Amino acid sequence: MSFSPEVWREGLAPAVVLGGVAGASFLLYLLGGEKVSKWLEKRGKKQKMKD
View 1 (cartoon, rainbow, N blue to C red):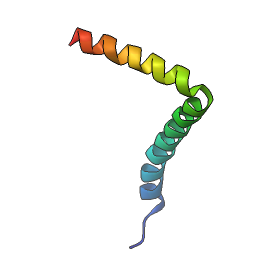
View 2: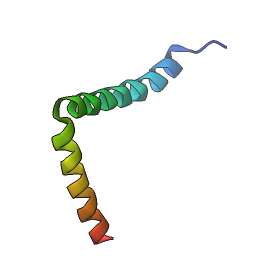
View 3: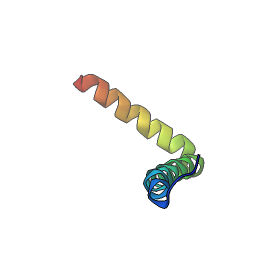
């Protein structure tokens, strides 16, 4: 199977964006681990109350 450059661009761009977002969140998690998880828990509880 050979891919044309257009297919590569269309497939790669979203993958790179998603990879960047995942990498950034992972870095944030590593740097702020406990703080972030506590904040996310609070936020999750607030959202559950709204539902």
